[in-house]
Length: 194
Image (cartoon, rainbow, N blue to C red):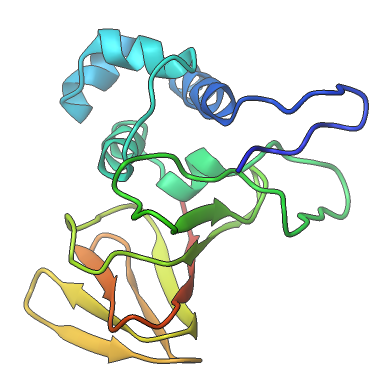
């Protein structure tokens, strides 16, 4: 899914370029070089350069490593530009997270603009198997809109959640989730306190 065109542009911006520019803006704003971000994220500065220019895609785990190196969250990286006043995001809008780690038929879509105090991401589909654990700054709230999931923490705690169930936890607590069964899953993850 592509980000819709702005009213006067006539063409849709490339999501990879938008995301890369956002990372470059955050990196420069923090006074960091590509090499410094590469050392912390364990990614080559050549890859990071290509990513910032929209020439390379990043998986979910790669975005997580970049976010940690920039002391932010994946949600904040995906948030669109801040707007004055009331912000609206239509059903076909929002930065869609790229990457091979999102299963076919699944999407992860940022639901807020940069500068908004919380960064929600809407997941549809979802992984059938656990991936890597995630850790990030802030607090996280997970709300199951439809379907059933299993939430797993690195300390061994596992919880099964169904429709309308909510879990809250510190982002610094290693966590991951997967869908249970074949029924459609829709999950809202909200990160606050960057």
